[in-house]
Image 1 (cartoon, rainbow, N blue to C red):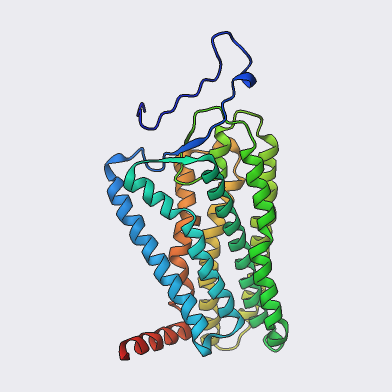
Image 2: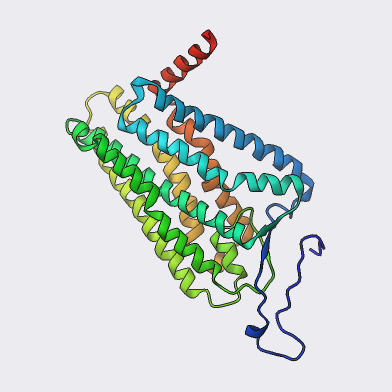
Amino acid sequence: KGNPHINVPFPQMNHQGKPLEENLIELMEFVLLGFADIPHIQWFLFGLFLIIYIIILMSNGTIFLITKMDPSLQSPMYFFLANFSFLEICYVSATLPRMLMNLGTQRRRISSVGCATQMCFVLMFGTTECLLLAVMAYDRYVAICNPLHYPLVMNHRVCIQFVTGSWTIGIPVQIGQTYQIFSLPFCGPNQIHHFFCDIPPILKLACGDTFVNEMLVYTVAVLFVIVPFLLILGSYSKIISIILKLPSATSRAKAFSTCSSHLMVVVLFFGSAIIMYLRPNTRHSEGTDKVLSLFYTILTPLFNPMMYSLRNKDVKMALKKLLWTIISK
């Protein structure tokens, strides 16, 4: 793939046969190859991802607004949903604008500082999403399994603490993880076979021993992906057992519809993230990595409003009220 525009040679060993360590050149920039292997559909991809980005911003932004403005949507469930919608906007904005710029201009270079910054934000928002989905599952568990205690258990102070914890717990861990990865020696090549700076493709470019970093990735993934996922599964197993005991088929159907939308988002997000970060290194293929990343960075924020909100009567009513207010003005 001898494209002179993106191939930057980095010498690995000079002619005198000096050890590799003496010849390490610190990479000041990387090249995000993205979808460079399919050049004939670059503009199609640009258009597609631009439309997806606009839909994500508008749909999640609308949910955020109506859950803040409508008096009937002031319960803990909608407080968490507002946070989740805002998070999805932040999460997708960490990757999509850069990808659109690369597709539009074909200038795929990114500085090592820019790459580290992007990775750090993607990891922090990803961690927040895992924790927030677990909090939302717990909220549904309390609402369905302990409805009488719900106002007491999920009071305003508890909700604020849950959300603050979800947003902040991952920050020091992911800053530390990013710093460790970018402290590794990079001596070329500098091409990242991905559309954003993610851990697996960056670790592939490191020249030193990456064993400690890989162990750290697995540890962090277990803490922030597997543990919340198991808590969600635990919550939903209890919820389903309670739903099955409900006397009327109507109430069972209503409870199932609320839970099924949440579960679909959970399976989509956690499934792709677990496969991405907990596979053995030998099985990593660039094409698979890109497809999996599309699932948890772009498709989840795209489907979230449809899964959570368009199947929710209260949100539909609030949306109709908002539209009617705008039209009547």
